[in-house]
Structure formats: structure tokens, C-alpha cells
Image 1 (cartoon, helix red, strand yellow):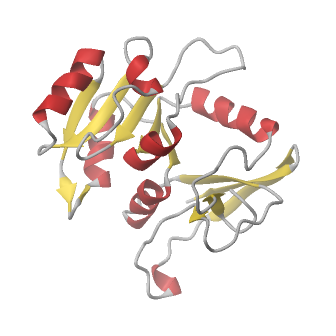
Image 2: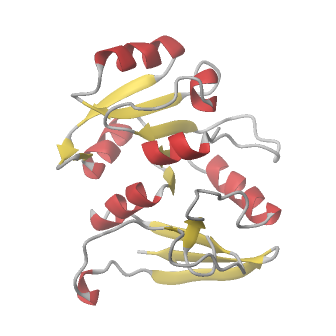
Length: 207
């Protein structure tokens, strides 16, 4: 994110806020987890591959997308490579049947999860992933999914890469709305590590 905690400009431009060294470090973090998880908004906006690249790793983590309605591009990178690197989709019981069939036809695995309000219940999402054998899940965004995990007290570790770049209030925040009225309601973490990574700063916080 930028110094002021933004992950994209108002027009959605996000590549690249941080430098090459930070991106390489993120690939190493992906490699240490069972799964890399994003929300539907990130999958639509960024068309990510979510694979580990450039560090000599052959074993890829499972790629997880949290999307209640499965409103994901069927011509994107995840869809095109679902038969090569595992793609698991956490969806609602009310997801469109044609979309379910399309994704399973591409080789994706579907996990139907419970809802909390209009969103998928993040606790149930992680319970389903854990029951399927994924116990170390690396969430890379976006801001709404990050906020839901934090609000549900499901985050063990926060890792942020901050760049010497200021985008301003109209940019997209790294964490979405959490509905907090008092500081006492905000989840707090303890600083475990802070160091430069290329031109950027890495901060790691733990429960």
C-alpha cells in the first residue's frame, strides 16, 4: 500500500505501488502457505494468477476466491489455469447453477459456505477450508475481505508493505469499512518485525 494506506487510485490503478523486492517477498510468503485467498472484487479488478513465480518453487498453493454469487470472469487467468493449478471457490448456497457448472467444468472445486448478512460468513469459509485440509491461508485482499476477516477476529498475522507514495483519500483503502465507533472495538496487534525491503518498508504484526 501507499504511505497513506491506499492500494489503488480512484480509477483502480494499482500496478505497481511497491517495488520488485516487495513483490518477490510476497511470492515467498505465498510459497509458505497452503492457500492464497482473495475476494471476488480483487479477482475481477486485477485478474490475478495468484501463483508463486520467480523463486524456483514448483509446488503451488491452492488459489481460493471468496465469491458468494460466483460472479467471476470465465475468461480470466484463474479460469484459464484452473486445470493446472488448483482453484477453489467459496460460494453461497444461492450461487447461480450455470456458473457453478461452468467453474466445475473448468476444473475448479466449489465449497458452499454459509452467509452472514449479504456476505459469506468468513468463519464458515475458513472452517470449510480447514476441513478440506488448508490450515495456513494467506489472504491477499481485497479491502472488503480483509475487513470481514478482521471484524470476525480471524486474523493471526498482519503483514504490510508500505511505499513512499501518497495517493490521497480518493484512493482505495487497504482495509474496507468495519463499522467501528470506538477505538476499544478495533483489533490490536503487536509489532513483531519492521525492516526495509528495497525502497519499501515491511511491517509484521501478530495477535
